Length: 388
Image (cartoon, rainbow, N blue to C red; front, side, top):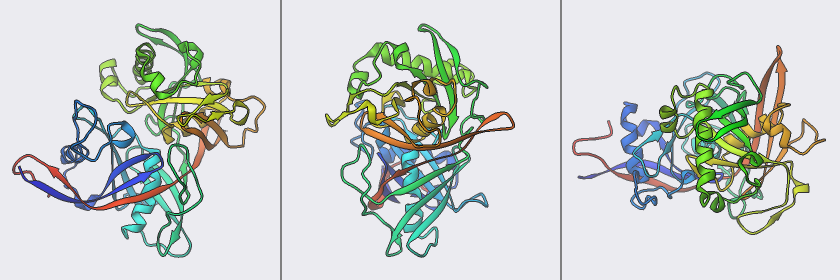
């Protein structure tokens, strides 16, 4: 079995890594993409390490992005995100990755797919997974996307040049509706677990939020503590499955279980002192909300950016589980500081009522990105299988 060389770039976007392909270097038949992505990342791996590929054994390091010419007049590029499962031979295209979104504009500029000039760039990114537009703003250095800067983001060592991501009209990215059930909060019947008050919100990616106290926990637990609590993992998985059906994402519990990426499931609690992964103590008086999220069944070591944007939108909906947990008396137009395992993430969300219905105007945050390797990724495909 010979190996095929495919041009690719290995990039960090926020707190994620991905192999990035130019669409022109992949087969025209998208049904062929899965086998290439699985081979490139090193899945399935029963050991959970992906040592025979470019993945890193966790969901945030098991990703592929594809960039090509735009199919919409209000965009400069199309961007398709693929979440590659670690232990299973499965690729999920049902949602977007906010962290890797921060690398797509810089990739397009550095590859010459988008022509820019001056000190700054604006690249309008069409995410094909959600049919949403993201404006990516970043500085240029010698005509290329800037890398050096003073922005530090929790979960990434060092600093980098800021990329401002503006998710335009993020509501309904997965289901077509900001509030898929029509309610800011619902009592969700979860087979085998009971009834939970949850908020099911769809902004940037569909999410279901539950109160930490209803799960019998504090809300400040770190990823290793969550992983070591099979009862909690079971409850969160069951809530996610029940919410998927309630939101219309899946028709059955079996289908919801197979569609692992969305909805994301997480728990929130009021601001409180908490330890981070580095041992630092976050002061509850310096944040607005405490949040934790699961990603493909694993506790995220930071927060998925699309889920954090959805959390910020939910925080602007009176009566939601997230709204009830946020620090009272804050300015509804100000940014929201979310305490998470890696530190504090600041997110802006503009939510208003339009014709009597809640409407998410936009959400924004800053990330850093870096191109780390460029060349060819070598993949092993079945005999006779080429790229054309």
